[in-house]
Image (cartoon, rainbow, N blue to C red):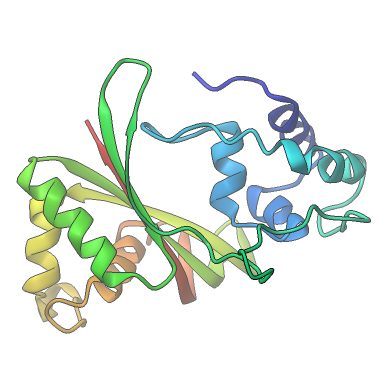
Amino acid sequence: MAKLTPAAELIAGLQAQGWSYADIAKSLNVNRSLIRQAVNPSPGQRQKPLTKYVPALTQLQGQKPGAKPAQLPPRRTTKSGGKAAVRVGIKDVKTRQGKTHQVARGKRAPATMRKAIERAAREKKDLKFDVNFKKAKTKSDKNKQNVWATGHMNAADLLDRIDHPEAARGETWQPGDVLAAMKIIVLAQNESSIISATGAQDYGLYTIE
């Protein structure tokens, strides 16, 4: 169960004032999934404390969605002093119940996603996978905004769908195109809430029981 950390409490306060995860992420210039993981991490994911963002979150209290804090914490840097890239790759994370889940993430990392799906298929696991769209219209909000959409499927079935798309099901990607498959499948599974979406720019997946 997630803890009510200082950051989580501040995020909850902003949500009570009408802010969405996407609103908060945009104001802090971070990924929406980082905000979600600070409040409600998915199975197998570590809760993000976001300690360095507490001052900025405090500044946003009482402001309307879209407001910007006066100052943001600096991004991680490399040894040469440049901005560090977003971390990608596959990780094993252990829950408090002692179960191990596989987590993978990447902006443009088809090889990483494929490797993670193949491993999950060998282990006979089910998956949840997330795709971040730069601009999307939802039935609850017709204004275009940054949106995360989540899909789910057995890993072996997902791998088969990626390699053997069926045009009759609207599967227009080229065989083996992992990212295009994830994008189209997640939109199909969320057609009841998402009207349209463009600019798929970030991908993640994790195994579930």
